[in-house]
Amino acid sequence: EAQVTQNPRYLITVTGKKLTVTCSQNMNHEYMSWYRQDPGLGLRQIYYSMNVEVTDKGDVPEGYKVSRKEKRNFPLILESPSPNQTSLYFCASSLSIQVGEAFFGQGTRLTVV
Amino acid sequence: GENVGLHLPTLSVQEGDNSIINCAYSNSASDYFIWYKQESGKGPQFIIDIRSNMDKRQGQRVTVLLNKTVKHLSLQIAATQPGDSAVYFCAESRSNDYKLSFGAGTTVTVRA
Image (spheres, each protein chain N blue to C red):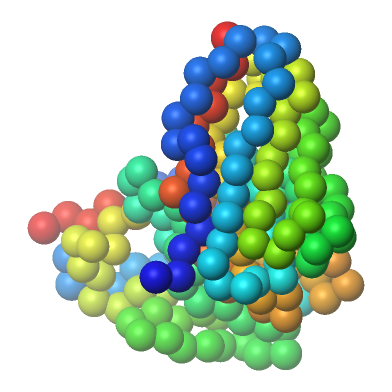
């Protein structure tokens, strides 16, 4: 089954404790991206990757890092989480030529206290 | 982010009626537009897309209209069903930029 898998689904952590949210896709897609969703703001793109070792900033990259060492994986790293990073996070993948036809993961709800 | 917005945050529709969800964008360089549906507790799901060289595109029970003159995008859902209840997002992108910018979303509620 074609899917994008995020882990964990829920996470509560403390300010400053490094964390990684994993994202994996099984569709051999070149394009992967991370979004955060906050009430009234829709989805905002954090980072995206056009292919292995190619990443670029989205609209809200501050406080986040990503890596793309393999085509299927695109982890989101919060080196020093802060309460304003409490949000619902989504990973997505698509073919590069049709980035909008994206498959989204189920989401990771992160709470930073 | 870009100014991609939906005109109304909520829309209540009678089952069987047609729904129209609107979206405005401000960047005239945008040339690729997408509609997504997000059901409660799930990630967004691609519905339909349209490129700026088209004015209209139809899918199964859905039609997207693009008016580049006034920078307006709409999603029409025919014969709305209870399963259409969800939040709908428009998004835009540009050929020379692989970023995707989303609007804030419209919550559609279908009345039985």
